[in-house]
Length: 302
Image (tube, rainbow, N blue to C red):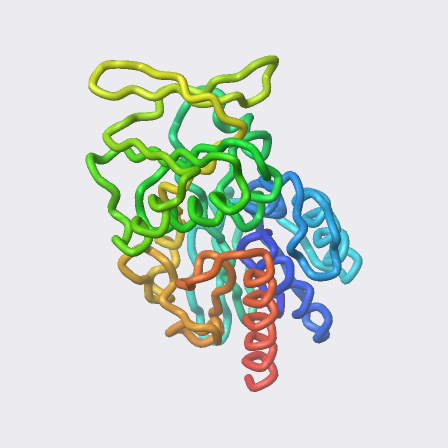
């Protein structure tokens, strides 16, 4: 029996474990793949207070070392659900694990929707990015493509247009779906071009390095040479297994506010899996601290 079980080993989950441990609680972190979550895709992080510059992997490793030094237990398993048995919360896994705790923090994060191109995964963090705030400075005075046509893609492109020599926005639909005001701002910029009704069919590389994209429109294929590609075609939360305990919004995110509470006492949510407007490393660790402290208060009041 643990005091707190944390589902997910990203920054939010590891921060939740740290705060639980520092409050004298026992904590188990269950992660299905690798610790660090989306931050591990960032080759360099320069917007995390106290860290001038470090790779996402370095930050994730330091977080992991920190919670291990504080006494966290770790399991590499895939959580399939959480149930309630009286005051206990039971976490079940695909591997047959059954773990009990007084409180659970769900910090399952999100996955970036990808294009499904050959070699795409290998180039993430090496020419392919998902966050202009995080990685835009690495492409200062360089040419980039932004894939997508919704608000997120347009906002990414606006930010990049202030740093990059040229920004090409590619949308597979016949028109952009983002707000008109964003379109007006973006396409008024001289270093921005766009194309609609195009499909990205391949990635251009030289000696394993990203060099551009291949697109197709009306049966004709064209190469666009660029130094980087920002993919902004959506995020995929994986919250379905927890829907009985925590309400989801129309997009599948936990419908919880900054308090990180759910409709189920003893179950809390944290990080990118929660409905929020800003998804950054700093907001993830903020959620982790908030959720863990709420869990500790819940346990102390039992």
